[in-house]
Length: 237
Image (cartoon, rainbow, N blue to C red; front, side, top):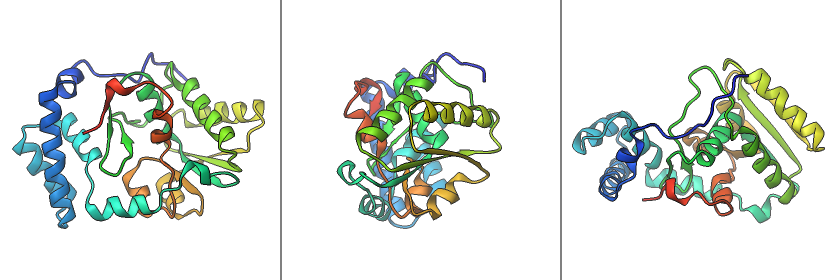
């Protein structure tokens, strides 16, 4: 599995997200998105409308989409959120690429975005191939510490089978679990989202569709960000 350096920022990101002026514009866009989504307008058409209104480029629109949710979605997701003190003896299902890449991005000081639902999202994606970065081991270490500290009974990691290198990542996580005596199971499946949403396990993800459809969720990034110093690149509008 080839190693990239970081999951970090793109060259233009400081200009797109880092200034007070830009953050005000993004906040206005998210407010408008929330208004329309709460009234039943479609996400795609609303994003186009709002993106044009505030002259946002594709990357900024992606961030606005990640931060926006309807009132109903926010209430639904929060009503199913499990608190850390209630995790002991429970079983969790980790949305593998979603969680790892988000942690890697945060540890790389890339911009990440706090949604109206309280969940953090990033701008990275897998594009058919997963490449390890310098922060991959640290990201897994954070999840190991969390798993032990909260005395979780079992974790099932799910990765997209079609993604290149998912097999190597599975092997790496299984070895870590074995070395550290962790009750972890790693599966490669064709549609992790559906499997997580239909399971009885607590979903560990920031994927909006899974959060809408899963029976319970835990906000891992909120938990992690309370413990690591990454505030400069966490956009919280």
